[in-house]
Image (tube, rainbow, N blue to C red):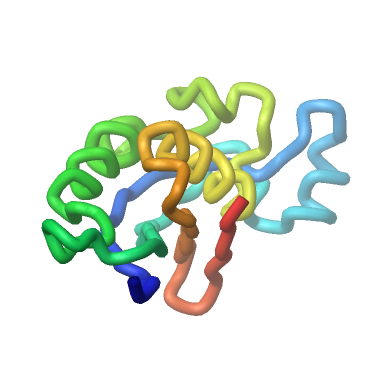
Length: 136
């Protein structure tokens, strides 16, 4: 059977601050620049969740995108949207919420729900020009 990749787009708005607690404000600013603002800053994140696998002979689907939509809503949008990632999202209590780390957290949250025979890839746009991709 052919292998096909299906995609679901989503978005969330969130604030964060890039910094390390063990560094001075001066060092944080030197490394993270204005992204280390102690008053935080926000992004309109765009998310693409991609699943690759064989087409099911009975349904014609790789995976039901309605179910994927529900997983993204419950696991990602409800958890991250209009939140301060540093303060309100437990996964970032001790993890710097860079786009790279956010994509890994999203991957891990969804991976446990997605059948193991499907490849999962996360693409996260922090801005229209800055984005990361993670596939485990």
